[in-house]
Length: 272
Image (cartoon, rainbow, N blue to C red):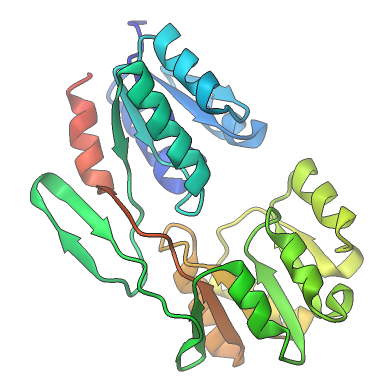
């Protein structure tokens, strides 16, 4: 196997597609995932060197230098802002080329630029209401809104910011947290008071039918999600909320620049 000179920071559907593309075309590369679960999915691909575990900026820089990585592709989650910042800084320090792979957005303005360059704008306004959809800028704003409501809430924004929902009165009864089916996520959720029928550990993305079933099961009048795009199952959440008449509260995505998945594919070809 030839020396790998591409490093993909995965953990998303886009990251998986990039790894599959490299495997199919014999492009040797490293793929980094934050969890062992992510590694178990990708390590089956031929010619892919998988590593798992979160790295800080210095560890990223050292890895890039040690493996003589020439191209780093950031396909982490759109909301993993700090991770993206660390990857960029590590690439600058190590002298590696950095590319951000963008995920398609829902109902957002995009400005096309030469060579597939694209700017994604975070134009969601706090408490901007369209039909049964309310868009806000952060989980904190979503919680602030929910503090003045009544009824059950299906929370699908992940375990890392779940602590913010503890500000809601009777959150242990009102909030139903849907988190990843990992030991870390479940333990973190239970530690915050989400347990029993109020804790749902499942791996997405989910179909419209599954979302509808959970909304019915939890009797939720509110469904909170991040704007995860098509790959993250956002359209299915939107349709499910409309089907049952629940209010969908959407956390708007941070603005960022990068390239489309198709353009990243073409760049990878140069390393085959």
